[in-house]
Length: 327
Image 1 (cartoon, rainbow, N blue to C red):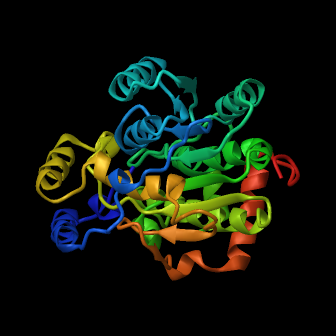
Image 2: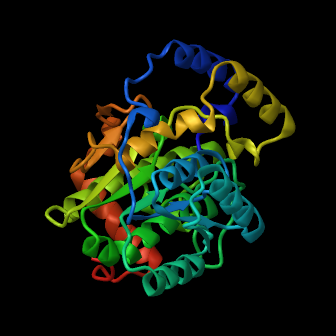
Image 3: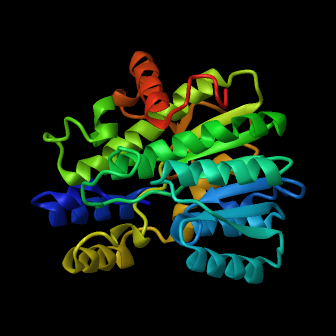
């Protein structure tokens, strides 16, 4: 779910155009999913937000590798359609639908409970679901909508599934972050819709992507020695449905630029697939992978361990975890 946050500010068009040119000139990584021969027979994977875009492309790749793939989607209709498309395209009938709305903690808990009851193992968890451009609103859980959809929902889901992933080790958790994380800020009060006056609505997205990355690194630290690895990555700027919450003019220009300069969903899925299945990423944890499938340092605001611990504790509190559940 990639979107330059500059699109929400004055001058966003020129910023997007400059970014497009830079991306056009950016070198391509040598790693591609087609060159990777890893087979996932006997493995189970969950991909959130898998009915479209990057998530659907990742699910396609995992299914082609013979994994049992669960598409975790908010819409039953759109999710089932994606399941049928993945089955038809890959010939893999071990592809199924799970209903998951990451903006609702009760939906996250229900999905996790079903998974724990029905699945004997979980080898790969791809936290891909998210949204940008959502208007400010509060959920039934008393949380800000963008922050729970993009961060707290995936945070809770991951924690609830950790024991299953530990029993399935070696296993991998991947968070889809963004290069826009460098523009984000970390303020635990934002999770509950407080102290948001200084943020533009587009800054909500970059801040949640920063939180994804920071909590991924903290989780990697906590899981040392368990055989469960955690990585976060940047897909690049990808033409998906990320613009659906913006006005028609912004959507038109973004997709026009995207036609010439941005990545397709399939291309944007490469770094996620690299983290999830590649031999090169085996045993790699607590790292941030760029869109060309190379390990890079995240922005400085993502590398403070004290901030990570405080954010983690705030997320536990906001989601109702007691600090032991899922650990």
